[in-house]
Image (cartoon, rainbow, N blue to C red; front, side, top):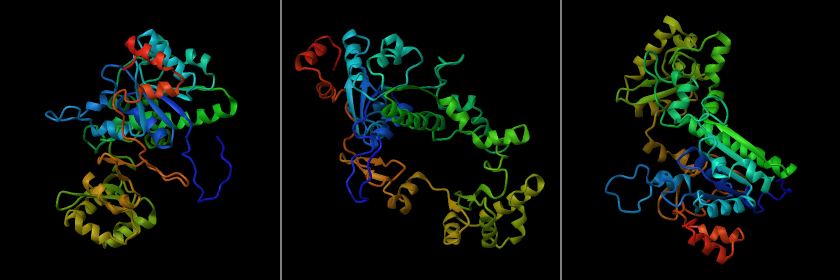
Amino acid sequence: MRRSAQREDAPLSAPLSGVRVLDLTRLLPGPMCTLHLADLGADVVKIEDRGEGDYARGLGVPDGAPAGTVSAFYRMLNRNKRSVALDLKLDAGKAAFLRLAARADVVCESFRPGTVDRLGIGYATIAELNPRLVYCAITGYGQTGPWRERAGHDINYLATAGVLDQTGIAGGAPALSNVQIADLLGGAATAAMTLLAALYDAQRSGTGHYVDVAMADGALANNVFALHALEMRGEPARRGEDLLTGGVPCYAVYATSDGRHMAVGALEAKFWRELCRALDRDDLVECQFATGERGTAARAALASIFEKRPQAQWVAHFAGRDCCVDAVLTLDETLRHPQFGARAMVVEAKDGGRQYAPPYKMSGHAFAIERGAPEHGEHTREVLEQGGFSTAEIGALATAGAIA
């Protein structure tokens, strides 16, 4: 996968151009993982059952919406992909999948452990046909351990991994995040990162890998600051009382007079000193990391200052001051923010809908929406033809009810 040196302004193909991914996943973690690959140029083919397919298509669609309305959730996660409708429970469908997998680079699945083996499309079977294949399984608790078959969602993985207990304000109940931390960090990002490493090695060595990703493991492994506190003090900080959860004056959220909030992240001494000068409270400089009664008093002093003005006035007050103080924005405000506009994070798709760019820029590769999210089975015949199936073979699959 190594590329020869080229001029900075020379056109480059997409980084993952030529990589074929067969995607058996649905809903969020798996489709987000393969979205990262698709946006980098991989040919991601969604393998969907002949019935409902990826039921994310209807997720959150309001009652009374026109027939065929597809959710924004599905459109965001499945751009730049193709769809094949294939019945893997039929021998003809399974044989067709194995034939496609023999020429693929990656298979990604998110069934419960053992399901793909019962279907006859597990890693051991495909590796005999394609030793260079990278096969990734994304599950809640992994392929081993007493909870391997246990069902769960993001909230369950965070609860089990000790993350949820750390989230929220002091004295309050655990708080839920609207960002699915275990699904996206522990599942999608971890899987994409490991898949790329395995793919690189497969290109060098000719031998593929089986990648076992557990979302609960990802939540635990990335719970860095709470684990740090545990290792240093022998016990984790209580909810809302650690350095990054509101336990010190310099890193907290403060309410304004209009019911909005300001986020203070003045962890470095220079930022904290500038904040104190901006508030005309040099007496608080020594209280940056204060805890106990002294810390409580300092946080209360800051709270009383911030609640005297509306958020807009505080934004103007801190404009040009280098002290890590920002307004807590609504999502609508975020999408209108000039910073995200300059980064082209909000993109208009060809169908007129709104999409959101991946969180990186790469020289020689410009993000583009080459195709919108596919309809169910939209590319079945196209993919099979490219996979070497004859017109007669495709007809036989249709007659057998294996494709739609």
